[in-house]
Image (cartoon, rainbow, N blue to C red; front, side, top):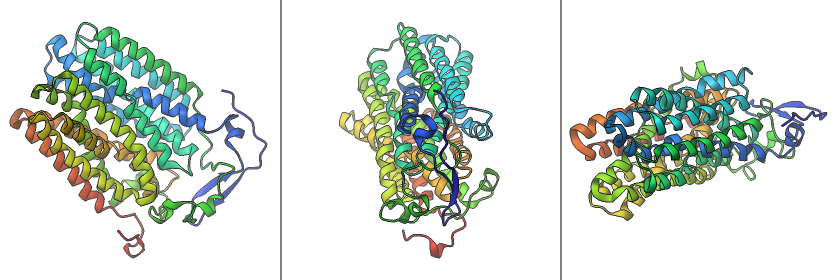
Length: 451
């Protein structure tokens, strides 16, 4: 896609909160086509890239039967994958903001690495190869796609960030549903290479094809034709989010973010939510199968978990604009905590409906924190370094992976699945408690919205 040249007068405005806006250019001036193209391209790339995370639970039982690996050894590879995926988001944003990692290059490279990760799972006969090809390379590739696509939507839709990020982030989860169902009912030791090779080829085509066309707007761009940004910042009628999600008092850079007291509470919340989600993705399918539900019911439970995680991100993003992001996150984590106990009880008693309900609660709760995180970062720490700050807090997922998968392996071995699901439920409820304690940095409590 060639870069259109604009002759439109460009100027910079500031609103009452000190936020800067670059106005005067339309999306047609910058792209030659509507900005919705960037939404669809980002969504397509995320739709394909999420397979390595949300589809892993359907692949793991086959891997354990292929070469005699233990289930613990296999799920640890997912933990390492999550560490690699979450850890690359911040450095990629830092390089991108300095013009050293163009968005198109990052997504195309990410697509190649995602395909390598899937091919590795289809052919590796050594755990060391799995850890290098899938965990490290595949994880880095997915992180590049995730961070770049979320950043693109944040930049192109400053007037509708929560709902648009929710839609694209949701695609990362529900894109795996067809694969999970196919793998759950048809993947075996004999055909895993063929099925995963075909999947890898499709992922490469979709992600790389989307990446070639992906672009970012100039920093602080505000779409021509949208309401005046200074009015939008305080108009509680047209912009309903203003009254429940107050803009940041000032802009924090990453170094300042790390010295802010609110950061620890928010980081810990993401750690706990990520730990529970990754525990479910790693263990739910095997738990259901071992309790007599079979691979079919296990696949359905995983598909519901991924599907509701994706669609729930869209719904909760929309609700958070109207009710408040902190409040919605707190309610979601309570639902996710209840879901863990529902999952264990239903699995133990072979209640198919209960398993589906528990998976839906878990997906709606713990899987939706990342969508809400993008809004909280902007409203707590400002917008000038929003993508880098998001990357810093998103790295909490790496810690959550070690907690949710690594610790769960020890608990399941020592105390069985009850101990693991109970711990996951308590983690989610602890995250809800921490969310209720969050306060906007720099704003006196007397000026905070009533709870």
